[in-house]
Structure formats: structure tokens, C-alpha cells
Amino acid sequence: MHTPRRIRSFVLRAGRTTTAQERALDELWPIYGIDSSATALDLAVIFGRVAPRCLEIGFGAGEVIGSLAENNPDIDYLGVEVHLSGVGRLLLRAHQSRLHNLRIICQDAVDVLRDRIAARSLDEILVFFPDPWHKKRHHKRRLIEPAFVAIVADKLRSGGTVRLATDWQDYAEQMLAVCNANPELQSMSEDSTFVARPGFRSPTRFERRGERLGHGVWDLSYSRR
Image 1: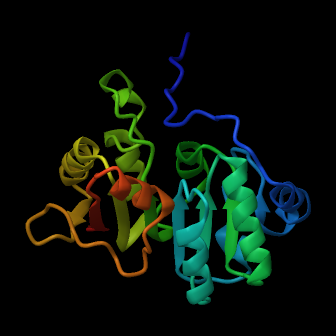
Image 2: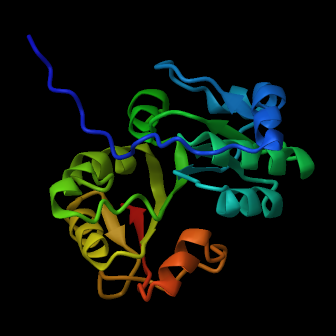
């Protein structure tokens, strides 16, 4: 029987990696990287301890997760990104900061969450500025849709948090509708709408670009019931 191919939320573009990033991918990946597969992850073994765990999906240049890992050594951070330039950049930062609480996966985040992360095993999930796929005919590619949000909720511990942000208003409204409709998630906004930017999230290059283009920025936060 033919199984329809899942529409992915990203396209691998021919990005340019620097010599330093390429060297990091060769030399530092064995230290910080987790190879792609469908095998479930034992995070206690990977990090060598039991600690609070945070996953960032699509970390871009690694600005947020790198800063968080540096400032919170008691929390373990797992970053998922498909673009090698960003992976190389974060590998360099991890090495320079001698981080022991950061690991990286270069794989589709949907596959990672669905197949490799155990239920109720994460304390926080971050999804900042996913590709907005702003043309209407491409909205089907957007990451934040009901099936994905259901997976996110399943991976969070009770009281765990998912935080999202976008600089596209119609995507923000879609995120809001989808997350509010999930029975496992409780908005952390008093009126079940948007929240202030969390203090730990310094404006990313995508956010700064959006501001230059006159875009607003919308943050959402939910806890698992």
C-alpha cells in the first residue's frame, strides 16, 4: 500500500560554511553530535546524568541555546538543526565555552521528536522563528500544526513548557489557534493570547531582520497540564 510522503517543513538550501565551521563539523561532531537514526535516545546516558532537559528545534546560528547552555550548567540542552552552517557555528561555541551540557542532532525535528524522544522526558521545548512559509500555497509546510503540537505535548513532563515565537502575524495567529486547541496544553497568558518575550531570549538575527522589515514579533508560552 502506498503511504503518502510527509511534507517537510524545511528545504535544505545550499548554504555556505566557513573553513572553521567545516573543521568543527569534522573534529567536534564526535564530541557534541548525535548521529541521525530512528533509534530512541537515552538522554541520561548521553549527558551522563539526570537533569532538567531542554530541546530547541531549529536553533539557527545557536544564539539562544548556546547562551542558555553557558548560563545554566545544571540543565541539559539538546539542539536540532538541519543546516550545517548553524551546526558548525554552535559546535565552535560549545568547544570554546567547554560546554558539557549541550548535544546537537542534524536531523528533521519531527522525526527526532516522534521516534527518538521518550514521552514525558523534556522539561522545555523551544521553537523560535520557524520558517513562516508565508505564501498561502506553502502554508501546508508550516511546522506548527495539530499533529506536531500533539507530539510536542506528549514529550513534555507535567508542568513542562513549550515556547514559540514568530515575526509573521498570520503564522502567530495559526500557532495560537493550534496550541489553544490542544487539550494537553495550558496557555501561560492570562487571556490565552501572546506573552512578553522571555528574558533569556535575546533578539536573534531573524528577529532583528524582521524588525528592520517592520514586522512585529509574537511570543507564545504553554505548560503541559
